[in-house]
Amino acid sequence: MAKLTFLAGLAAGYVLGAKAGQKRYQQIKTQTDRIWGSAPVQARVDTVKQVVKDQAPLVAARLGDVAKTAGASAKERLTGEQLPETLHRGTDGRLHADTTGFGPGPGKLP
Image 1 (spheres, rainbow, N blue to C red):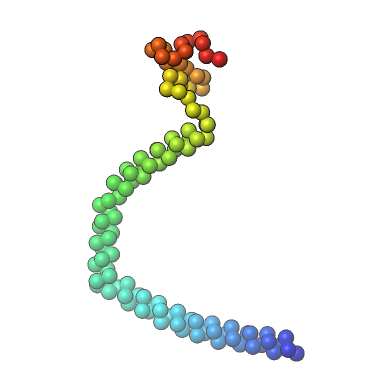
Image 2: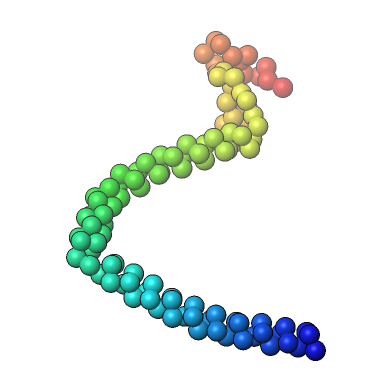
């Protein structure tokens, strides 16, 4: 019997709370819509939209540069290869030496 009374009280509380919550939600929504639609807020929104539109190309270029740098850094970390300046990996995937006299020279790589 105690469980049944508890469940009935829980159900009644839920229903009444939901109705009160809905009423408060509508009040908040009405107030928010009124503020959002006001002339000063909309003037500021228009200003911000214009600034974003003007700065978009600069932001896109900067993001592109950052992405390239991050990609190169990630590739270097993933390959785990720390080559001296006199060595490089060619497009064929093989190691190549600097033949200007500072490297080990062709044919002397393992």
